Amino acid sequence: MKTKKNIIMALGLMLVNIFLVFSSCEKRPNEEKQRRHDNEVAFNAYADSTNFKKVSVDGSTAYVYMRWITNGTGTEHPIATSRVEVHYQTYRLVGNIMVDGNYNSEKPARITLYRNEKDKSITGFRIALQNMVIGDECEFIVPWYLAYGSKGVPASSANLVPIPSYSALRFIVKLSGIIPEEDKK
Image (tube, rainbow, N blue to C red; front, side):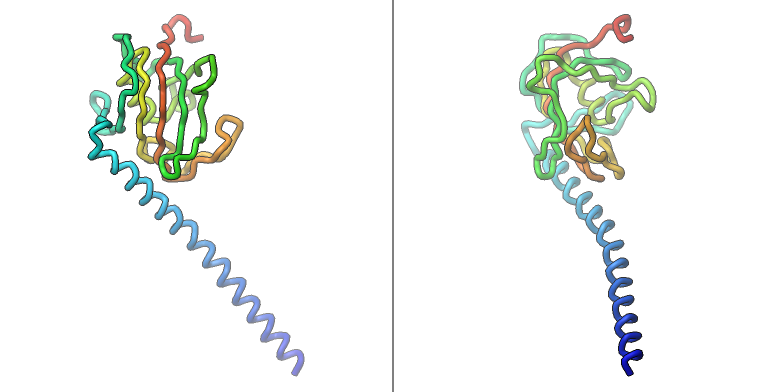
């Protein structure tokens, strides 16, 4: 009798464990689906904003929403392969959580827009920067699919806060300079 009870209890515990394993597997896709939805709603809210302008680069249908805080006096725009000097702050759009930046630092960051697959910035950042001139200070909103996409970015020494999958981003950027080609070593 006691053995039968032990077997029934063991089977019951196994069933509970199986249920917990399968229910936790389903939770992640639902969380990601909700995160994607929330970030798309937050990004699309800027479509009706009179403060933000929809900007893209020639030959592309991809766009970000952008507003100018300060208009620069420069006349040259960075191109797709430029290296630039910027002060920036990066936030997750949903929750307004700061994930990276050097805005209060004296020295600007040197960033490559695109050289190759390993030496590049995110697509939304490149689109916005190519619409700026030296001295511009802008805020721009990047949809998740032009940021880190469905993969996200774990916390690291570069960004202390993780960027989850499907995260739209908000940047505040001041373009301090475009590095001449001969100085790009």
